[in-house]
Image (cartoon, rainbow, N blue to C red):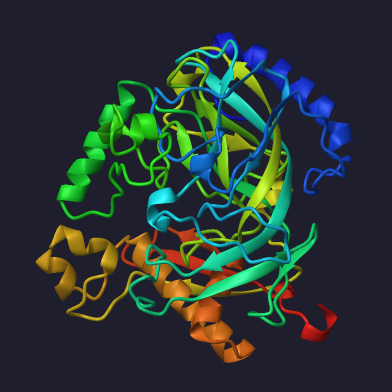
Length: 431
């Protein structure tokens, strides 16, 4: 269990005991399985309209002045009906959703909310327990420029549409691949505080000006329009949803599944809880830039930990250890070290303009370079053994391969492992 201030520890233990007793029946005694039924909603945030801009329960920027669309008391069951990350139109599973009429990079991510949690104050922590995550419609995985190997796949667009069931995802574009259902919200968040939103904006702007990878405030396709759009009062302050921050956000952590409690530091009264970017399944790293993206129905409940934020530098979470396991009876793994060709600079370091970087073959303790190398080895392995194209193999890696740190103690060559669950490969005739 995470560390909490002494004055809230006893309260937390009692709250978690109550939550555990309440959910024991819902989870059917198995913390690594979706419950058969979710409880009835005390507060329901329904989807409506074709796109986020048409939906009063939807927004795609982050700012403390974004108004709440609902209120909930701690302990009440809240249901969020979400859209997929690219704000596709909501259609039945047999149809392919068109993209949003806005520019895709501008509309990411549509979030459902925010919900004002009664009694939550700035400086508290909101404990959010996920109860059930239900897929809606079909899914999509797309290679994007923001993937770990985006530089190697530039100009080679590729997208896979998935048919989703409560058990697994399959696609005619990837015959013989069956991805088990392991849904989680990529984004679970509060809203930034009035002081913090300026700190985050300014520190990211400094990194952008230095050449770093940053998505600064952008008024185009922003929702809510009156605050964050082209004529919005605080458009220059509205943060993009793409990076996670201290109050939560786009954490893209596959272990935040049903049965897990996520702890979000509250930076405003009411916390401003919102959910979106739900993934049907994802490998650790989401290496191609997307997971199996989908619309969903997310059921959760909350508790408030008074004054606990002073012990939190960012979100924490806890849950059953079974969620850390591979969804497979066997695996194959590759290992990467921070080694490169002389005269080259890895993409993630180019903005630093270091002459030393280009000259060296070893970049000591560089986990990102080690992860790239492990991933390239894994893509080669999938191509060689499974007869898939390089693009298909990259998609498989994004939705199923886990990047895990092997070691960080061995000086020059830290190690990252890319782990492939082998049970995802099945006879196409048995799908």
